[in-house]
Length: 199
Image (cartoon, rainbow, N blue to C red):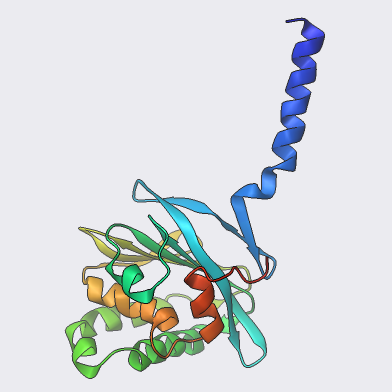
């Protein structure tokens, strides 16, 4: 191969890479969520993504990552292996307001008996919000389920809680968005892959 042909092919490859640069992400309300992530050495795929609205305000973009695509709540909750929920803030929210919304979401989608089983983990999870004075627009929160470890949460890549060992607690978190009384009905459908809002 001549030097000219080699350089031409290299330039073409570079242009192709630039053109395809956004192919590995889904855009939701201006936020790009990777269509695949690596968590605890396991590859996960974006199952669905959407926006959490409160009245008319966009609060955060959310993405659900699973090893295999699931379209029903029961299948998501029963899915083995690693799972991740990613939240990207679309506005500033105080830690107290955000923490209360999480706890209300758990209460609205679980029984008293279920909550009694993981009350200590709920308290620890609530304490997590106290470590973040305010969630700023653009902040990223992840909540991972890692078998043999538990629920591990991070804020902008820094671990802020966990591991919390009960899978029931992680499923209670998932039910905030996927339960019978979800935080946002449309977001529930989006996370189950009905459509990706904002595409």
